[in-house]
Length: 81
Image (cartoon, rainbow, N blue to C red; front, side, top):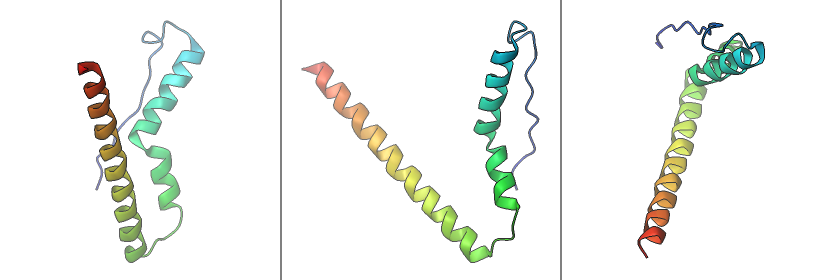
């Protein structure tokens, strides 16, 4: 089970700018994946379906990370020339 987290933004952090506060709050909520979890829990999901989705998400993430490493390696090689 995922740990509980309280997302908060203070006016002092954002220099009393409401727009910045809202943007910062939304970023924090997305990073903690709160909205995604609420959507997932809205309906019952069979354990086999949940496992399959988790496996697909992990595979997608591995592919993204691999591409990221590959691109950074290519950038480093270009700089060394």
